[in-house]
Amino acid sequence: MTAAPTLLAHGVGGRQDLPITLPQLVVAAALTLVVTFLALGLLWREPRLDRDATGGLPVPRWLAGLVDAPAFRWVLRGLGLLAAAWFCVGLLAGPDTADNPTAGALYVLLWVGLAPVSLLLGPVWRAVNPLRTLHLLAALAARRDPRRGIRELPAGVGIWPAAGTLFGFVWLELVAPDRATLPVITLWLAGYATVMLVGAALFGACWFDRADPFETYSTLIGQLAPIGRADDGVLVWRNPLDGIAGLRPRPGLVAVVVVLLGSTMYDSLSNAPGWLRFSQENGLPPAVTGSTGLVLVIGAVAVAYLAATGAAARIGRTGPAEARAVPGEIAHSIVPIAVGYVVAHYYSLLILEGQRTLALLSDPLGTGANWLGTAGWQPHTGLVTPSGVATLQITVIILGHLLGTLLAHDRALYLFPRARAVAGQVPLLALMVAYTVAGLLLLYAG
Image (tube, rainbow, N blue to C red):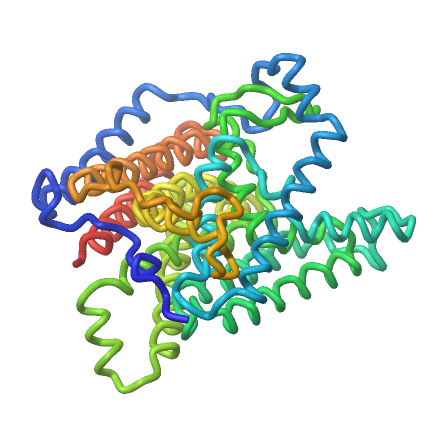
């Protein structure tokens, strides 16, 4: 099966489409962060965000009743199973050609589309996850509590399994040879389903919270949704910054956000002409070069993050136990940065390839049928222009870093003594500036 060209083209902007030159953009973005930091230091002197997720305005009673109704939850589970079954039709019985919707459904509609949906509605994948539903049905048939497994999963495991499975997926998406072909996708999904279902049988339904890459991805981004739950479970409208501030540190959280941000940065690097030449001329198999590059970029993001948070803890004069907690406490500030990069990289892919995939899904077997009524769709390109995409990319990347700076500032006021709080944020500001400069240079390297 030959991948559709747009599957590998994550943007249509370029340096020629920027409203200002690239050096001017980089300097302006860095100065924007510095000015924001100074303004926060002067005007934002006490923690203001709801770290304990206790606030929010209750949603209308009818909406809360609908969302919490068992029947509604089963409808969502049923839709998830139906969508998975339709996907499997193309995966297992569809033609091995570029007209098969499988690759687009996995990489575009699921992976990329999950970000804006979660940003609006919260952690939706948990509600529709077909593997979670299959485990629930099996537990009900066996008259077992789905929350209980054969053994307890140690609390210290946290979401480290999700960091591993998330890395496995981004490796598939960005590095794996023939990653848009049916055999490769089938093999990866079979391994993913096995790990999820066996883990759930051993440890109960909490395994999905700890290990499912799509649930973890959706849950992280869903913390920024304008709707969520207070700590007492009540469905509320909330300030999205309060939502993400309520993301509690847990083992593996830093690894997850670093993998998410680093993989997106590597995606930019892998499309740069210099990297493409190096990959073609170094004599190594592309998978080896790509795997090494992916690990090195993620490693660089991790080293920069740990160095900055470690320096912040020293300047803030925290104790040893508090210093060890700083990376996890600040990790929530990386989420809007990662979301900004996801939107910047994949907006045009979602709009163009998403429409094409929806058209192909109407006939997953390639028989000329039109089961969903979308077979005749032609991609509408009005929302994807070079200058428009370039402007969007600049906006969301800078906005993501501004929100990250604000979140880090608010948390630093909570973590550090007041007299050292602003000084303790200087390494974090340097980190945000470094991520911004690197992200913009990589994004427009071509």
